[in-house]
Amino acid sequence: MNHHPALDGFEIVDDVLLIGGIPLDRLAERVGSTPFFAYDRQRIADRVARLRAALPKAVRLAYATKANPMPAVMHHLAGLVDGFDVASAQEMGVALDTGVDPHEISFAGPGKTDAELARAVAAGVTIELESFLEARRVAAAGDRMGIRPRVAVRINPDFLVRGSGMRMGGGPQQFGVDAECVPELLLELGAADLDFFGFHVFAGSQNLDAGVIMEAQGKSLEMVAQLACLCASPVRYLNIGGGFGIPYFDKDRPLELNRVGENLARLLKTVLEPRMPEARVTIELGRYIVGEAGVYVTRVLDRKISRGKTYIVVDGGMHHQLAASGNFGQAIRRNYPIALGNRMAGADPEIVSVVGCLCTPLDLLGQDVGLPDPQVGDLVVLFQSGAYGLTASPTAFLGHPAPAECLV
Image (cartoon, rainbow, N blue to C red):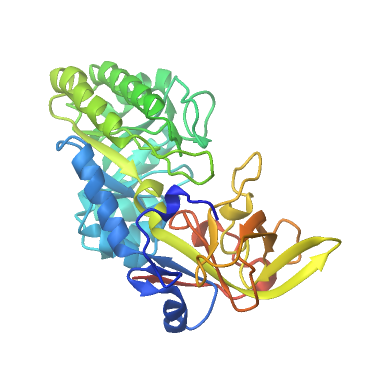
């Protein structure tokens, strides 16, 4: 394959890819079977260190658990980040099990059940309110337990973010409270027995354009500064989301992180400190922290030619790595970075299509990709698989076994 930023930092020894310092073929033996996901703990730590160096020191860094909720990954991150953002009771449970202070866990997402809200109230987790009704349900849960719930308001902003892989703010949304309705909700919160803590704004994800992220952060801070004047108590918490993207495809270029950090430092000085001096700003990132640290490994089972086209059939597929098949939000299907991990160099690339073991033409992991004479037994590696892999895929489809996961 052509060099891709996804390969930067991975070691290759004797044409074999190393994950966490372990040759891929030996790692496959240790895991015991293919397919599997492997996450490199040092790459995760290095990414957090890079973020710390680029972002202002006053900014808190939270991990968005939905990107990869593997318990071992979260326990590793508990010592590196300042908190977790969760979107279900199960994710909340894993976050609490890491020993992180419950006050450093935020619970976002529409459709929280009464049981989930009660558990969050009891644990002291910050609940990010998505609607008027949810605010009333949280207040009722607090009354039943004699606990004053800790809450923040998630805002659906009145601006759009260009270039996001998935838009999560602006226009009609199931996420958050429309910005123009927030003043009314703040009046309700002031009359209820709730510990209002601050705001959450998340306008979009998977953005590689530093300029767009900088513009969104500026608009978010200005919007919240205006709303802060209406709050009954000072704003102490401000989650401005993240949306930092990683390069998946050939034409993608890595995010200019330093530009984002420098601009954010300016915004804190000119907008936050004069108008919301007690607010602690949180950047919430998932994909950007773990996405490039993970690979999906699957073994070649068959090689066949159909009317002049070569297919490489593997023992994994879209039921484990849905995003790589193009069925997770891609309008036009493009290939993830792909290689033969046990033979990173060698023969001239052969144009093949890598397909999974499912009975559907959607199960396509690599379309017309160049691989060096792939044969039965070779290990196909899909890079950029540390985020939105296993838990974002239809693992029950056709009843194939779930893949293993390991942190090395």
